[in-house]
Length: 443
Image (cartoon, rainbow, N blue to C red):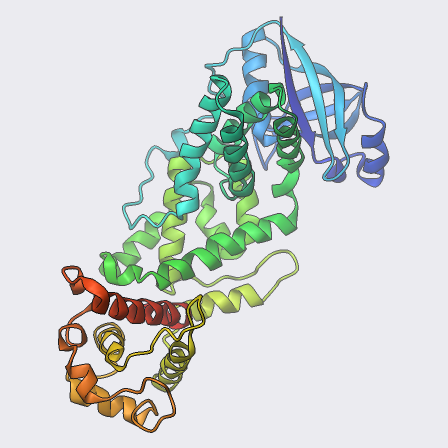
């Protein structure tokens, strides 16, 4: 015989919804029956938990694998277990079941629906999600091999901070195994981490958390890619956007259309449909690309109909007009000329550092058409940064011309230069690039 543990969520939405707090408080020791609910329109793999005829909730999506593997291994149509733990909010009941056998190799999910789907656009997966897969593998290996406790604590903390942003099927099943291993560890801090993971299982069912994840994936991530100059460093697929959009619309379960209807509710749909990671990351990449290209029109944001995120999406790719762009660049220069280092010294304290500034403004932001040093200095004088401007380091032709091998070439071509003079120019260019990318992205 084998003993498995899994969690029941959704108490606030089913038969005990009007008194779920009282029910959860007195749930330990209750006998529950877990019944697969293949007719469930939201999730055909849902497993309902009931006490007699009372519908209490559902087995957490994260734990469905082990429940189906226990049913398969023991040849049962339903499981019976006892509530052994209860967490109040969000309400989560932990159930313990004794089963004859578990078929750990059984794969309950049918992925044939994805067989004909493809997406061959740009991969725009957030770094946080890219590294998450490696983190879960490393953490599970360390727990199984009883590795260094301090290292396990560090990895666990990272996982707790980022795993909720990945709602793929692989992450939900990985976290079940990790939670189990953490609960078995002798370290008190790691046992508490297991409890924290258990409490978080119902999080995606809570609107406030889905909103947080949607803001990260569909507001913060596209803006970060834009600020990194993604369109300048990659083939942009501009001539294939219609084709790529058709590929996204062909994603099973109409999930791309559901994203366009409501990005917050889209996450709940992904969770219920148990989307495999390889397909989900491609879908998210396509969504980010369409956001960057201004190809999306969001109908609603969340159940409250928040308009602020929609406006931010609309403004993401809205080209900044010439007048506003000039104001932003001028303000960035003002900020740069007043910026100080850790010792309180001005970062721009030598006039020849304007050569590095010119390189960025001419080759990356095109404030003048050609890398003409006299024309650049005249432009800076017009903008109020020339002689008599009041700044400690004003822009003048002699100093810029004295460092022409920086002024007339792009920042990326300075790699062969060394020494103190180079470090000063790199500092000026790097700080200015950071200010401008944060304000208007890469142009």
